[in-house]
Each structure stands twice: as C-alpha cells, then as structure tokens.
Length: 363
Ligand SMILES: *Cc1c(COP(=O)(O)O)cnc(C)c1O
Image (cartoon, rainbow, N blue to C red; front, side):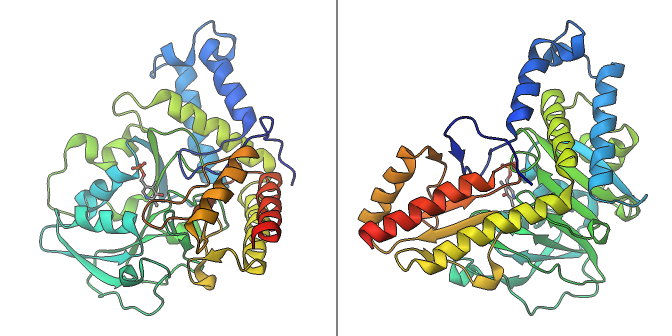
C-alpha cells in the first residue's frame, strides 16, 4: 500500500485542484512533448484521431471497471466543472411543474439547489445550514413524487461525508466531486453521479458523469444540444471537441488507481490516513475538530484552534515543513487537511508529527 508520490519535501494538502500521483505528472509532461512516440504533442492531436479515440475508450472502460458499473450506466467526460452539472442535471431530469428533493449539507449543495429552481421545484428535504453545516442530517423524508433526490456525498468545505448513502425509491443523484473513487460504494445504486476531475481523478476542466440511461428522455422541455446527456452518450463524449488534455490526465490517474489495486485499496489507504489524523486531533486539546464525529470526512479534515495567534504560528510551522494548502476555507477558518487518493500516508505522518510537537511546545 505504499505510494511513491513525493516530490522532495512537499506535502500537498490542497482542497482542489490538488495532489495527483507524481508518475502522472511525469507521463503527462512527456505526452506534451511527444505523445507515444508519434512526434506530436497530445496538445496538437486531433480528437477524431484513432490515437485520441483510444484514450477516451480506455478512460471510459477503466471507470466502468473501477466502479463495477452495470450495462445501464454510461460514462461521460464533459466540459465544465461540477458547477455546470448543478444546471445540467435539472435541465435533463426535471420538468417545470415537477419537484426534485435536495439535501442542503453545504455550500455546494446550496448552489445546486439554486440552479434547480430555474427549472422546476427544488424542495429542501433536510438542512444543516443553521449549524454552519457541521453534521449530516439523518432523519428526513423524500416525497414519493420527487423526480430525484440529490445529495453531496462529501462536503469539501466543512469536512462532512455521508457514511451511509440514503435508501430511496426515487432516482438518486450525487455530486461526488471530492470523494469519487475514494471508497467502495454500490455505484449502481446511483442513477447519476457527477464529479469535477480536479480533486481525485485528474486535471481541472473536465467532469466525470455516470448516468443510468433509463432515467433520460422523460421530460418535455427541449434541451439545448450540448446540454442533453443523450447526445453525449450517442457521440461517446465527442459531440464537440472534448477537453483532450484533461481527459488524458484522467486516463493516467485511472491507470495509476487500477495499478494500486483499485477502489478497495484506496479506501484502506484513505481510512489509514483519516484514522491517523483524527486520532491525533482527538488526543490534542489544543486542536478542535469542527464537525460531528460520526460524520467526519475521510477526504477533508477540518479543525481549528481557539487562539488565532496560535493558528498563525502553526501555519508557519507547516509552511517551514513543506506542507501546503492546509489553511482552512474562509467560511470555517482554521485548517483543512485534504487527503485525496494521491496523498501519501507519509504526508499525513509529517503533519500529525508537527501537530504533536506543536501541542507539546505551545499547548
Ligand atoms: C469543488 C466542488 C464543486 C465545484 O467544482 P467546480 O469544478 O469548481 O465547478 C462542486 N461540488 C463539490 C462537492 C466540490 O467539492
């Protein structure tokens, strides 16, 4: 389970864009200079060439295999970040007078709700907003006639994560931008999954979308050509020029993931990292986690100190040790350690070592 991913001395805890395997950087750099000995850069390769069609096909089949998807689930690589999906999902699934159920568990979920309201009724079935999103709501009901239920599986900013996926008879839609392929789930239970690539699967500029084709084509609204999932399925994500380089970086990351042993191995590694970080946090009173323990995210750990001067001092210690991206999001403050797939256990060991040392000296 050891991952060699250490550009000397840097430990990248950025929330996104974020750490990727070092081998991916090397291969991507090589492909910019000369793609597979073709004499051409990946950046100047036509997307309708057999060389790029092979990239797209392999990326698609790796996603299918890594997620264990059944025949009904289609894999798409689309332009734009997850934010585009906030609009594209309701545009494809929700008619004017219909209702969709949304869970309000963070800023990203709230943004998805705002967009859905442009297309139909977005009913908020639960919310933890009043506590600044420190927990995942457990008891809520979804109206039977809701066209779909939308959840954000991992709340990147606040550091909460759905540990169990709600059982629902409704169509299930998930924003998995910050925990896609980080843990074993029954992905076939979801009818639509979307994820901006820049947190766990590649470079910014492309979305992974997994969609059950049976949920499409049921609404009356005319959908603009480029927004209609069915057109992208038909054209194999090549309705227009795809983000060629971003897709290629996804392919390299997916190959790396498979070589590590797949999602189950990632989950073990992510569990080990999160356990080390949270156990350290809980053993040091100078640091304080900000969310419900049972809802803690294994991808983004958020914690604070009660004294702002100490927070500044600890940030300086981190910086001196080569730790980057640890400063918390402005809406929470303190610290956020993002521990995506490609972050090594070594990096977390360095961080927790600094935390213990700091607590001993300043606690
Ligand atoms: C980062 C993030 C987004 C926004 O992604 P963009 O690619 O910037 O549009 C949406 N949802 C979640 C859960 C995120 O972590």
